[in-house]
Image 1 (cartoon, one colour):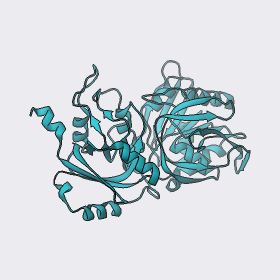
Image 2 (cartoon, rainbow, N blue to C red):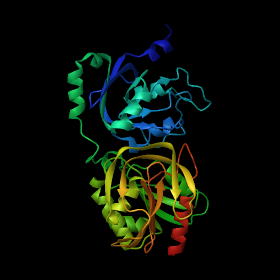
Image 3 (tube, one colour):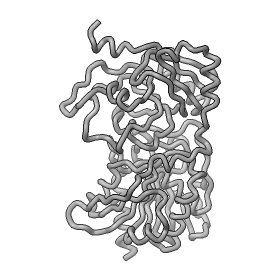
Length: 380
């Protein structure tokens, strides 16, 4: 057996869900033990962007596409400073990384990052189980750990914290503020609160003449409003939105100051909470690059990138009264009618539950950054 075949064969590994169902396969990436929330991603591409998305902190990601890793890992596509997933589950990883930008294999990247994974299991059966039972805690145990008594491994899984009630913003936010300068002429100065921001997001704003001050999640209100003289942006991020009280206070301050505000994903949930709406945990969430969302104002349907396990609880199809004036649900997911957007009618603010920056695509929703620019123009 050659070196590549030996490495790809892996050591024995077992995946155990908190309800007791288990899958046996071979190790992929680092050998050892990991626990987290089991979720599935329906994208057929963009695995490097998925791995480096901070919104996956604390989650074991199951890839529904059976063949993963064929283009390797490169230096251009990471969405943050590291791989964040707690574990990685694939059916049939490619033994060869073939792409002109590739600098290494997916397996090597997982080993370097210490991410424990499993391969050679029926990911279709696992995904169907999660769709039926909902996202749940899971453990991956490989190497010597895979030989441990199953009841003991299941007990370890059940001792792991649940995602509901979990605060993860402090784990992923930037330690220090930094600036992404406008490309070309500067037209706006924006403060982006990093709740788990992806690198493509400030880049998309910079393309539209925005100088973006990316700031830590614990920034104080006065500094935020000073840095974001033209607008405030709230990023995506991991964890339960019900725990992020400071971010909610930042949004309320921006709304009170009538500063143009745009939130995505976790930032959308922060706007929802700031307006007085609740949030709740979805059964298995939306994760992938193929989610259909309808703009209720125009009827237009966009195929969008998602990564969220929580949603805003707001009534669809009616004008809603809040402490900051009238609000409407602007977008819904056509798969399950989950609220995917909010628009304030009396203050300059809006949000969407999905990712308009969408690396590695689709790009149907990129014009939302243009809407943010128009909102700032209108406030001048």
